[in-house]
Each structure stands twice: as C-alpha cells, then as structure tokens.
Image (cartoon, rainbow, N blue to C red; front, side, top):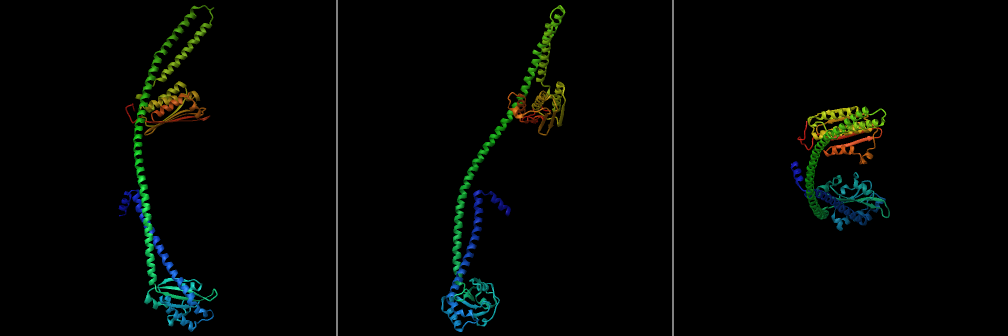
Length: 477
C-alpha cells in the first residue's frame, strides 16, 4: 500500500506534489492552531468568570467577613446576610454552593450545615487563594467534601477568591464558589465554533494563494525545462556531430602520417640515388685527378694546391656521409610487418649504433594490436626525442619505457642531462622538435607533456591510443 502511494506521488508533477504536501501541512497546522485557540478561549472565559466572582466577593462578601481578622467565627447576622446575598442577586442564583475557609483549611461557612467546622486537606486552589490569587477551573468535584454535588451535577465551575482585611494586604479567609457551567458551555461552544470557522477560512485562503503561486511557478519551470531539454537535445546532436568530425580528423591525420612517410621515403630514395650518387662520383673523379697531378707534376710545384684539393675531397666525403644519413633517417623500415616490440627496439638500437650511446629500454604488456599509424608515431617520437637528448644532453642517462595497456599505450623518454626552462622553450617558435612531437601525438587523439628542470634532466610522456577510430585496416599486429 505504501509503495503504491509512493509511486503515485512520484508520478505527480511539481505543482501537484506541492499542493498535496501543502494541503496536508496546512491541515495539520490548522488543527494545531485551532486547538490552541480553543484552549485559549476556554482559559479566557474561565478567568473572566473568576474575575467576576472576585469582584463580587470584594463588593458584597468581604464586608460580612471582616471579623475573621480577629475571630475564628462568622457572626450570625453576617451568616444570614451571606445567605440572602446568594438568594437575592443574579449571580447568587447561578451559584450552586458557597463556602468560606479560614487560612488553615477549616470550613467556616457552607450550604452544607453538617460540614461547617470541619478541617479538610488544603488543595492547590485553596493554597493559591490564601496567597492572594484568584483561581478558577472546571472541577470534576473529586474532593471528599464535594461527593454530594458530584452525584447531582457531574462538574461545576469552581472559583477560589481571597477575602482581604479592609484597608490591608492581609488575606483573612478564602471564599469558594461553585457555578453551573451551562451558560459557560454555551458561550464556549459559540466562541469555539467561530474560532474554528475563522481559522479554517484563513488557512483555506492561504492554500488558494500558495496553490496559485506554485502553479504559475510550476508552469514557468515546465516551460524552462522543455526549453532546456530542447537545447540539451540540440547540444547532444552537436556533440555527436563533433565526435564524428573529430574521428574523421583523427583518421585523416593517420592517413596524412602514412602519406608523409611515403613522401619522406621517396625524398630519401631520391637523395640517395640522385645527389648522393653524383656527389660520390665527383669524389672518385677528384681523387683520381689528385693522383694524376701528384704523379705528373715536378717536385718543384707548390704542394699547397694538392693540400687544398685534399681538403675539398674531405669536405665532400663528409657531405656525402651526412646526406646518406639524412636519406636513411627519412626512410622508415618496413613497420607494417613489425609489432610494437620490434618497432621500439629497432629505433632504440639504431640510435645506439649511430651515436655510440647506451639507452635503457623497458617494454611492458602485449606487443600486438597496435595500428600502423600508431607505430609510426611511436617510432618518430622516440627517434626525435633521443636525437634531442643526444644533441642537448650528450645522451646522459637515456631511457625509454613503453607500457601497452588494454586500450592505450604509455610512453616515457627521459635523460639526466642539464635540463631547460620549459615555458621559455615552448615560447620559442624556432624549436620545431617539441612542437612537431606534440602535434604528432595530439593529431591521433593522444596526450603529450614534457617536464624538465635545470640540472635535473628532461622527461617526455605521451599517452597514445592503440588504434585510430577503431579501424583495423591501417595495419595492426
């Protein structure tokens, strides 16, 4: 049952939820306010009746009890006067019983003649009245001396009023009155009914005002929510389109990488087969010419000519060596047939052979499942980083660490060289090496970072995807 109610409540819109919750809250609040007002009305009516009784005592009863300031007995003529007061006045006609107590709990006057002169335990009302306070309450007549009235009336309005010694602040007796509650009950019922009506109307008007306000606010929120949902839908579509474009860009970048390697291979081949061959042939011809000159010329000829020609030959040999090195560096090995381990190992060992340095190599994880564009990027990235390390740090403490995880590859290349100020280097647009490495990595959806401190070495980190756009056509092992 509770679960069904919760389900129904969840199916309500915002304004309906508030109206239901507000109705319950206002209903509970109306009950609390109504009962409080009702209690205040009853208390006020009873206190008013007590005040009226106290005024009656002060005006008519107290003058006939002044002898109690010095005596323990009420004079007979004053007792007769009290009896006449209860019979001849309108208030007296509403009084069922009347008693006079001294300040020690002895009954000095009562309608019940047999009870006069007896001493009873002093209750709270009598004690408070003895201290000068008027006490009124609806009594269930539980006291021993009231058993006869209880059987006849059930309950009465009981009032204790102090009797003061004239001209002083001394309480000399306590007058106790018992009123019928019929008129009092009718008055209380009318006031209670009116108070409940007023409270109900006020709460109802509050509920209507709050409901109208919440309904307007809910309609505004609903419109805004609909607009927001529409914008979210448009944004989602835009993000999906951007994702597609991003994937196309990455795929295009991978294709460009393959094309670039093809161009570099062709340029390297042409350098090797063209200018390098011509330069080699020129060196051979120059060497032959120098030999002929040395053989045919006399010893008296200045040897400076032979020395200059020899220096030209050496320069040409150096240029040929560098040209062949450039051509070899431009041409990648057959990476299509290699896995990740072969690719990384080859570029590291090649660097060691060319520079006569030592590189600490670590490869973790599976070596298969890597797309060819990713392996090309790894090869070029390691090649460029190790070259920079050898050129700027003299190859000190070179290390390469490759971790092949389930969906990405982590690469870290470090040295213990002099280091440099990274922000300054990055601001220098002439530094193409770092910019080129970053562009290679980011173009295929990877992340690139470089960390270096003066005197503490340099570390390059890259996080690369294992494949480009989930496409396995670009050559994977």
